[in-house]
Length: 176
Image (cartoon, rainbow, N blue to C red):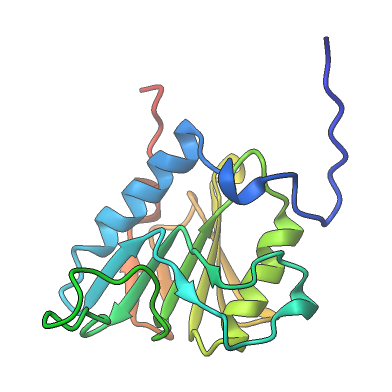
């Protein structure tokens, strides 16, 4: 039995719940690990960003209360729970400076571009779109302004957040 999937700019059914794959997860982990080497950054994966006070309906994301970038980073101190009242934070209203989306087999590029536009509307300063099948990362400094880096480059450079990463380590092959 074969399955036909129509890939337009819409979110694939249950996309947010079924993002993971070996390559997606490994790329996400390597990015977080590489970013953790920067002492100025507080790095998180799958952190819920509270968007309940924002109308992002024009981006057609289906998310109403929160958005979860695959990886995000705060320059300096991240939001922390008030230890007197909370053990942890389920969702944070303080937006990170960097949001990273890793394309998974069940996502469309169009959907992730809309999500990046929403991140900028929320005040996030830099967004990366990571495309493992192409071994390419687009570093957005504005919704329609980006630089493309691939494995032919020595490093990825984010001038907004002042980050430099060896791009070959992001796309390290699982097959070697």
